[in-house]
Image 1 (spheres, one colour):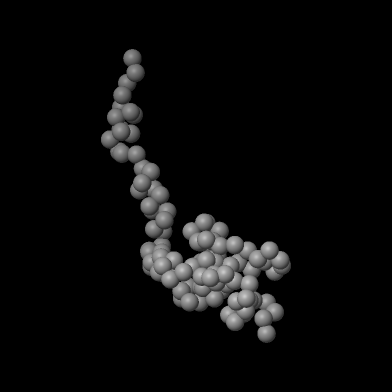
Image 2: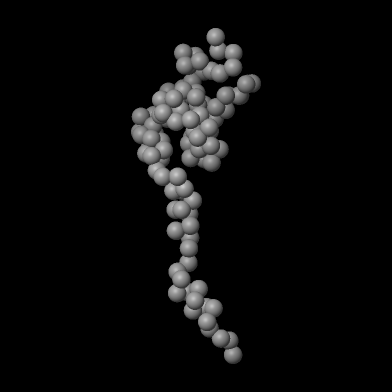
Length: 103
């Protein structure tokens, strides 16, 4: 019975390469909450059902599933570290501007 969660067999409302969020998480071997977090952060293409209970439907063909597996294999903090390393000004610029005395 599928009273609380969508069934794996109930795919009639899904388009090609669409998955119920829990089913895709199970196929990828990851927690539902991680995939949901990626949906909320815009890392995954997803939509919600129009009618309650408004379950999440995630688009993932074979190539997207592979991309998600690779994303999952990255170390914790990778995205945050990447933001900081690409946005940090060079140290010499900061020191030069701090040392410069205005007359």
